Image (cartoon, rainbow, N blue to C red):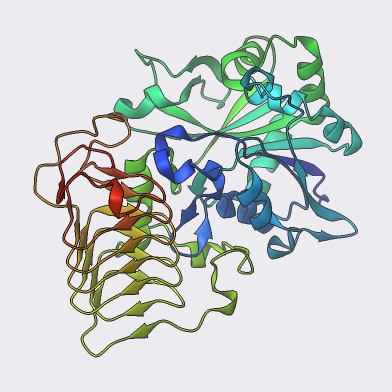
Length: 421
């Protein structure tokens, strides 16, 4: 007889995600729209649902309202019923930043009452800001087979990227024998995915042991590896941390790339279609006589009269006659006016591009954004929520148009590469 699952899920969804720039001005990173109709957090929630786990605590912190509206009662992911549910866990904070969570372990420690009220065999600890498809049931089975105190989901990444992750060195039994947190001179290319299974009692004991240990990667995991039984669960599928503008853009492009391993529909990813801007009450997309669409995702409620190439359009986007959109991501209810061009750009919701305007002009992608050079440096330009791009304006590469910018915010006819409006 198959053993009943008894794991509790804690989903960390409070991160600022500052490298996503204006996309997180008014929302938490896990609530950022993705692939037209989804939010980033939908992937972790759907993986939990598809793995048969039924009790979830979602730890929020930074600008949580959009995320909380999206989660609702949890019904979209079948988390309603007598023995199942999703619980929003807001931070126990004051008014100062110093009162907020000091790290991932501190976030869980501040919600230890939720843990104690929901006893379980294991605790599955997840991040809410990754794009992936994973069977947690298989990971739990390995954790139990190994009699592990902690099991960490890990995968091989390019050596050039390992400095962004926790890195583990394993023996021939997959036991982790050494750990490096974001190493500058790495000894391994085996990266932590930020997915952990803890023995329930072991996690509680660890949180009570030393309150100075505020982060799992920096403090609790290195001590556990030195003293106890910590194993790596190898993962070979698609997984991406979409914490930068470039990685976020690439993951969206993976959705529409031919033969891509990223397929939300095939993975059984669900979203709350009743939430703001999503297609519950949208009409089917409509296409004019002169519309041309290739290698793109067009969501419900869109009206396409122009050309769309290799782009992702969320519900309600309007592309007028003669307009061209290439290699871009447009959130819900954006309007691109007649004869305008949008090339290699990301628009937040309700952006208005007037006729004969251009966003993403020129071939020089090498000038980074002057104010945020570590955010925009590959040619992608950002336009914030509710902003206007006036008729006749040309916006270059690696530019930022701040949310709700009006016509009066533009200094002249052109916004040069790397500049911000």
